[in-house]
Length: 110
Length: 117
Image (cartoon, rainbow over all chains, first blue to last red; front, side, top):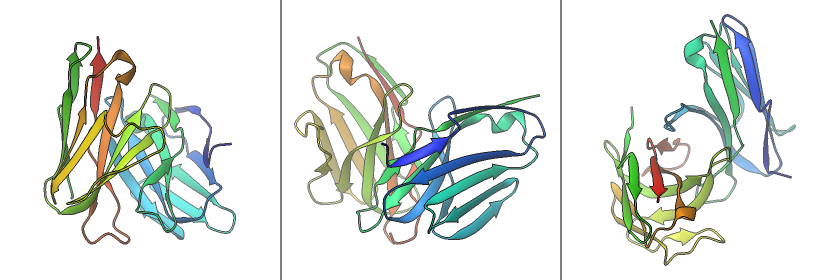
């Protein structure tokens, strides 16, 4: 079993829909990242959080440390949101290296 | 915002060639840089952790003599794939953690797609 599990693996949505991507992990962490990877491969860090909730524009990330679960929400989705969204955890008491989920491929249709 | 520059973006070369990939933090100092590899449809996997001025720490299964890492300054780490073979073809990406560390997020380069013929 992977230490970081994401669901769904693939997600197709219509423009304007509310989207949720889930992440569960099984290790002790000091932080959790949500990353966005575009087709060219480059990665953008969307959020880093260790508790509660963060919001940036149409993106919202939440984490429940007790349940070892995080969600990424996209409100009013748009075709330009199409990308792979990756959950990654920073293992507690490590040098800071990340363990990555396999990603969720999101496709938003106009 | 913090920027990490990775070069080159694409490399296509013959089997047996050595390839050097550079990772630079452009507007911050990074005592620690990480090198990851991603095979198609797989998640990113840590190869090694690079600390400025000291030897890199390699993950299990990663050959340190094949993947040479040099972190000579606070803004530059290099990964050299020596005598590359087709099975080394992959997407390599670096990230850098600001010197302040702690709760600072890592910043990623745009990656290098390596194809060995």
